[in-house]
Image 1 (cartoon, rainbow, N blue to C red):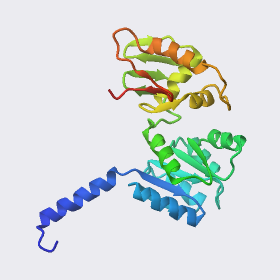
Image 2: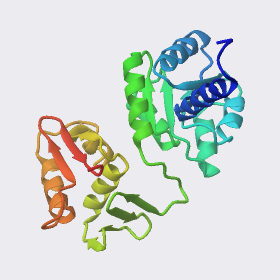
Image 3: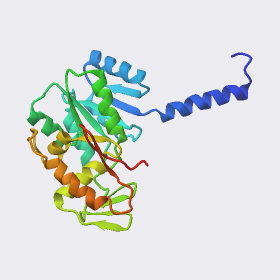
Length: 248
């Protein structure tokens, strides 16, 4: 290293800094220091940059700095409860994706967490692999906020206020349920969504009925989205669910 030309050393430093900048930067707000250390170590091994604080108030300050890709936040925190932090951010128009951690696992608790503005809710204890998988899904989502009225993914565009949708210049005549289905999939492009996920998020079912309800609605939606001579966007994944394929 001592014999390395200065220009070469500078290039190496710039390359390293560039690689660091490309890594997703996460904010971890967790007052259980042992758990936080485990999460931080695991995520850093998976090539994330992780900043940690134990305080809800400090976490709120950091989340407002617009330097993070995602926030992992415990529900019960000293100074300010986790859901209060998330709700405060949402009220200020800050839509930093938030994954809520909690030992409270009842359905009502999960619903409360999501309604407060959480994008996902993971109950303790959990496997590191599950946390990592959920982070990957959240980071793939298009970033939207409460002030955005247009959602655009590939050739699809959706007006969230007027409740209208288009593929290129062709308007799609969607029924309300079809609109919600397409919106859900547009927020998760190139991601497999299961029938259970759609039933829970679009129909608000907390159980899986033994019907082909989702398949029927997806079929109707596909016929409207994928016109003649157009590349099919809605793909069926056998035995799993569906995918809005916009990357090809």
